[in-house]
Structure formats: C-alpha cells, structure tokens
Image (cartoon, rainbow, N blue to C red; front, top):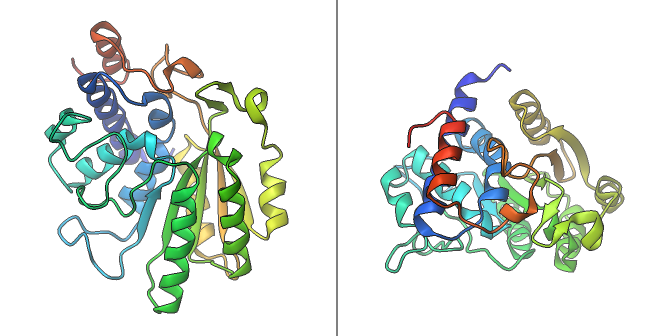
Length: 272
C-alpha cells in the first residue's frame, strides 16, 4: 500500500469510534468501522477543505447519507481539526453537539443533517446542481449504506443526477453486505447494484473499500470523468479491524461494554 499515513489515520479514527460509542453506551460501530478507510481518504487526501475556514465558498462537501454512522464522520472531523478529539467522548450525551445523527447547525464541518435514509443522497444531488449553476468548482461527495439502497428516494435521486449530468458529484457505496436485520440479500436484495446504476446513466467503479491504492485511484477517476456522475461501489467488511465485530450484523447498533471496548482498542493498536 502506497499510503501508510492514511492507514495510520484510519486506525486512529477506528479507535476514536470505539471510544466514543463506548462512552455513549449506544451508537453504530459496525458501519462506522467499515467506512473508516473511505472517509479517511476523503478528508485527508481528496477533499479541498479547511478546518480554519469551514464555510469556504469553493470547498468540497461530504454528506454522510447513512447518518447513523456518524461516529466515523465525527472522528474524521476531530482528527482533521474541526473540534477537539476529546469532545468525541460526549457523543449522544445531553448538551453535546455530537448527537446520534449529524446536525449541520451545531457541528463544524457537517454539511447536511442526515438520518432518514436516502435523504442525504437526494440533498447531495441538489448541492451538486447548485454548484454547477453557481459556477462553483467545489465537488460533492456522498456516502451511502447498502441497506440504504432499498429506499426508493435513492433511485429518484440517481435518476436526477444522471439526467443533469452531474459530473461534479461522486457517490460512494459502503457495501459491507449487512444491515440491522441481517444480510442484505435476505432482507431485500438490491443486486445487481452496479448494473442498476449503469442503466441509470452513471459511471460505475468497483473497488476494495479497505485498499487505499484502489480508493485513491477511484476518486481520481471520478474527478476526471465528464458528463455523468460516478458511483464507487466499495466492498467493505462491517466492523473492520475488530475481530469479534467483523461481518457481524449484531454490531450494527450496539455499544461495546468495558471489556469489549478495551479488547477492540488494543486490537486496533491503541492503549486502553
């Protein structure tokens, strides 16, 4: 892997996720851990953003459409310098700005309040269209969950993005194969998702979502694709990095206890 510094940051973000969810006593560790490498590549290599100027007009914007996975977004923002890392331990606590879903009015760096699945993706289409109308060079990046693809609003948004040729927009699908009730293909299959997006007029890329070489290359390809939006289907592992959480739907929305959190942090190379 050519990007050891990104791998190190991703591990810190994973440790932050475990610490935050454990401190809260609730939250969504599985889908946060699966997306950590993707989010790391976006915030620490790809996107044009400035923590000291979070409202910069030409900034790139990231929308976490699967808003329940906000521990990965909060951790990336903290590691990037939007607010102190120590504040992550206030996750979901009364009075904290770091609530169970991202709030664009309270958290620096959060571009859209999300939670109801599919709505963040729809908002990202509007943002990309607005940037084009304003001749704003900022790009729009949106992360979706694979269970989220069962929402009809996702496909309405996909149709609109292709219709308007929004090549300033990149969607990334965190394809870990699991959702709250079990495996996607058993709950409500959306396969073949690549063919569906392609039929809607999207440029489709398929990668290993834990390989930084492939993530960076795909983002670069998306940036230089003209005339159509790009979706990156990233094959990931739910709970990535923590052995007892990996590929286990039970960790979709459950916080680790003291012993489990200690073990998870140590497996990720941290100290408890």
